[in-house]
Length: 55
Image 1: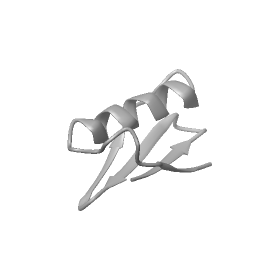
Image 2 (image 1 turned 120 degrees about the vertical axis):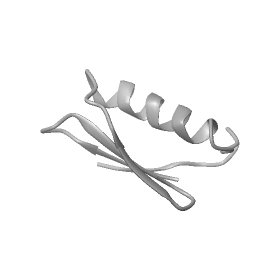
Image 3 (image 1 turned 60 degrees about the horizontal axis):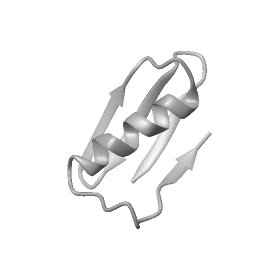
Image 4 (image 1 turned 30 degrees about the horizontal axis):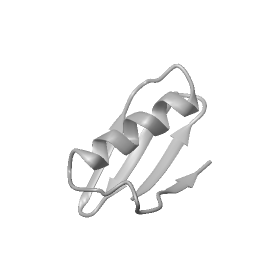
């Protein structure tokens, strides 16, 4: 999993397995990361795995 937050557009690019998707906009980075993690959970990511957050 890779999460990249765009501070200008307030969107998040989520890369998980073979899926790359832009989601948002969000109120802040924390909300975006939560949504990105949920996006990945819904597709099989386990909470014990560590995400890679890029700023």
